[in-house]
Amino acid sequence: MNRNEKPKLAIVIPCYNEELCIENTVKRLFEVLNDLISKNKILADSYIYLVDDGSKDSTWDIIANLHNENTLVKGAKFIRNFGNQKALLAGLEGVRDLGCDCVVTIDADLQQDENVIENFVDEYMLGNDIVFGVRNDRKTDSFFKKTTALMFYKTMNILGAKIQVNHSDYRLVSKKVLDIMHLYPEKSFFLRGFFNELGLKTSHVKFDVKPRIAGCSKFSFTSLMSLALNGITSYSIVPLRIVAVIGFFMAVFAFIMGLDIIFEKVFFHNSPAGWATETILLCAFGGIQLFCLGIIGEYVGQLYREVKARPRYIKDIELK
Ligand code: UDP
Ligand code: MG
Image (cartoon, rainbow, N blue to C red):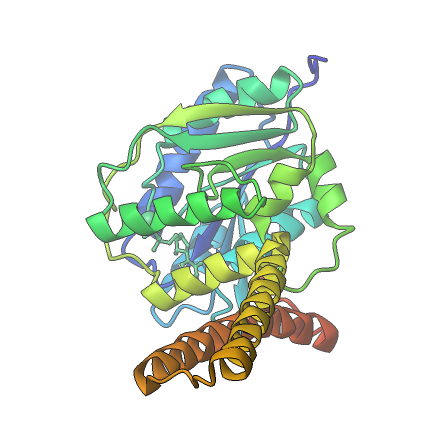
């Protein structure tokens, strides 16, 4: 069903060491907001909410100055770096508390084309609760990032954890989604999996990715790996089943081998020779077992984090 009331829009930006980008980004996003206000598409008290994820540079000072000049710039500062997913989460929870009808999340480097925010709002007015920004191509990505991203989407889909391909956290969600999100107590919350399993009215908007305006990527190989592993262990138990199936077939194989050895010994008095075969099999099975233990370990780790129930993030200061 279409919506009639124009919304109060919040824009959430996670920032980690973004002193080179942030001022420019906020300025540009206000141009977008003002354009939408003049087109009568959003309310005039729509605002920007920046989450400083424990930056070590002057990012927070810049945010505080921008807030002093204009209170439509709001934000929070973490006591330390909790990672981009936690910063996004804090932003979404922050704007839910401050009040808004819908919220767009976008990166501080404006790599995602900010002009399509208007299309996001149009889709929201058509009654969509989630609007995914989907990138047209991966031209600006390195070969490494392209390949690992493709592997990630493929693996997730094979494992049954369906996530939107070529969508990274550039999206609009409605207040209703924020309220549902509030019901999820998970500590290692995987946003992309969550938005995909909701089943609310969803649409997509295509956009182009630009090169970073300044600075460099804040993601390392290990942080990308840990994001991917969290995604898998949060939304799929297929790896555990694969482990069980491998274990079952290994046991059957060992049983048949055992029978064969007894058979040869009893009927042909012929003990099988060849320590090489034995060593290879030992190593192969040892490897498979350790790999399977590792997979189980990932899930135990996930449980460990959830059971300890430590705060997802800790805010130091908040500017409302
Ligand atoms: N970011 C964050 N915490 C981190 C790493 C990144 O809040 O620990 C933010 C970063 O400031 C940016 C967004 O997450 O706004 C995406 O990061 P980046 O542009 O470095 O990632 P890439 O575009 O290379 O995937
Ligand atoms: Mg970027």
